[in-house]
Length: 327
Ligand code: UDP
Image 1 (cartoon, helix red, strand yellow):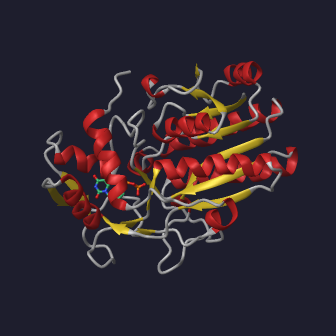
Image 2 (spheres, rainbow, N blue to C red):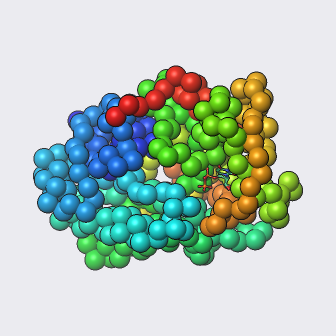
């Protein structure tokens, strides 16, 4: 079996990626420091505890498994936190990733799949966000991811490290078989917070701003099912293994939904009331982030067929009611 080193394999997206990799015939080796990840989520391959800053530990794991590629998910990813504590993002995401990239090159592991974000684009009024849109991030989260993209570019020129970079839009949903799902502590994302409000785990959802320049005044996002998202990663790995050149792909459906539309759809899917209140804008939020690219479909053959909003909410709701991690 071919090993793939999955950093952040105990997290939301990483754990779904491990399942997809296993189903595609790879052995996913999770490397995680368990600061935000869950041991219970590591179900599809070996688990190695370690931090991105620990170069000796990284070298040990590369030597032990001789991975054919790295999928790098491990990161801090909260816009609100990034606005308040930018240093954490530069230390953890940028310095940590640089350490990982150097370890990969030293080990001769030269295929790298990286989870980047549409937050690298920043605010662009009436512009279709494709991979050539200038990157002008509004927060340290987006800036940290853009910096890692730059590191990958420079390391390709110097050492031949090839990469597939995925710029995610908003990831949602859960494994329909219920083996893994979204479980953040604390939770900051719209759909799980809304589901918490629906079943009484929190009093109400706060809608962050209703005075944006959008039809209903709330922010618009492009939601992608986590299972579709990780399928793209398996296709990206194949792309590299087929010897194709480094490439950047947006992962979004091209359809945007406002916060109010997500609330309405959740009410329909769960058949329950959604308690919410209106609050101020959250610093660092862009008005609208919707992908305008068909590159992943055209070149990778990616089809996000689970990414209908109702399907994502239904899968998230099933997980929310039945699934959780304890450790
Ligand atoms: N949002 C909200 N209330 C919340 C959490 C999020 O209104 O409690 C909004 C947020 O302003 C954004 C959208 O929901 O417009 C998605 O936010 P999330 O944090 O899920 O993802 P992000 O877009 O920041 O990656």
